[in-house]
Length: 115
Image (cartoon, rainbow, N blue to C red; front, side):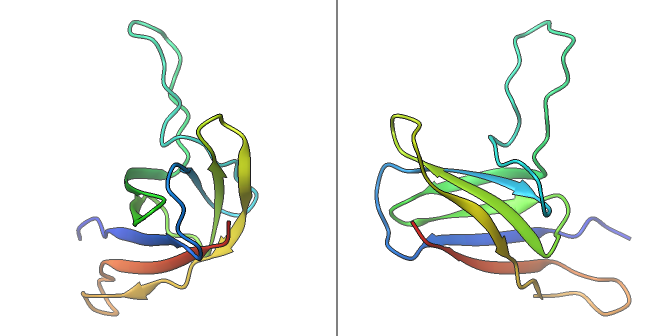
């Protein structure tokens, strides 16, 4: 058994440069950075939002690898000043792109966000 990869391709319905995307994994979650940053030597534990390896930008779209793969994902778009442009929850229609029914496989969801 191996870890299966869950990847999202995320695009804005109306691409717009300069926006930042925050995600979270699951219904009712709170979108945020991939992990809340902490200072070196701190005993605090980073808060996981269920996502990692978010790459891309608001003009060309993003790619994100996720830990869970729930049917609902939370999102928040902010501008350069940190003002919220759009936020909410979106359904992810996961499609298995390899593997088998018995072993699972990597899955992909294409998401379009309104802004």
